[in-house]
Image (cartoon, rainbow, N blue to C red; front, side, top):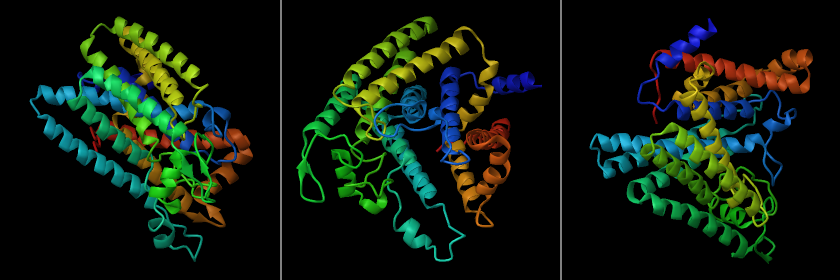
Length: 396
């Protein structure tokens, strides 16, 4: 039955789609939803946690993988549109509209919450007035637009130069540009939580009430902040370059070989660079870009080898469902997760009751929390499969 189900999904895949990329996208977005929805944030297995500050865990790779995939997708979609004689101006105009939609969706999720258990809760004061300006979807939108413009108007060799320039420029600013702390002290070159140039710029331009770490000391900041979006663009450009290579080299075996070599080289360079700039997701440091982009290339090469060369495909069907509707999946999960928290049940929420009254007593703290994530992902799959089966694909 399961085999038949998977075969039906694969048969619905349009012939022009790149299976390895769609599956990798699905794997990435599924992992994102899994780590974002534990039964309790107090009980997380190590791979499902972000690094405390410097360092790298599997969870820290999810967002850069998605950004990398965005870059690869740009080359494929632009090539397809240009083959239909769609002008660069029209493509860029559509890109601007898509970016605005992604930013609007990010703001929608930031505002979609109401505390029904608190009679003194003010949505206008606590959500609207203090809306988080940046965020995951907002960063994806901005990075997508810049990477799209680069692919439309810059030759690949100059895209590679832009990639390097962004990393060098960002690293140089972070190390050498001085900034002032609230107490008047002038410092530079710090990579500390709440004390670095990126945090200073977020605090200056966004304001403490509009960032994720509003209580960080001495400087509130956002992990999807303004300055750190520059190296995130570099991550997308690494995907653009990989997508360009795929479009010019049709030999799958050679693709896998070249990607593996480049990926290992990038990872080694990132590890060496970590002696100069720490590996840090929140600051999207140059070493983090090199390592995460290298691992993303390696992941794509592995997917391509298994799916396209070895033709082992049945396992990929669920991830194909997730990947085909990535933004809808992300929005659905975000809305449902908030609803589960908002619905009051006694002195807690519906989510709290499910975890503390059902899963925690039966399975314990950590396994119960992880099981909640799996159940949430399974529910999401049922909805996404219903959309996939009916040909409903939400393109922002």
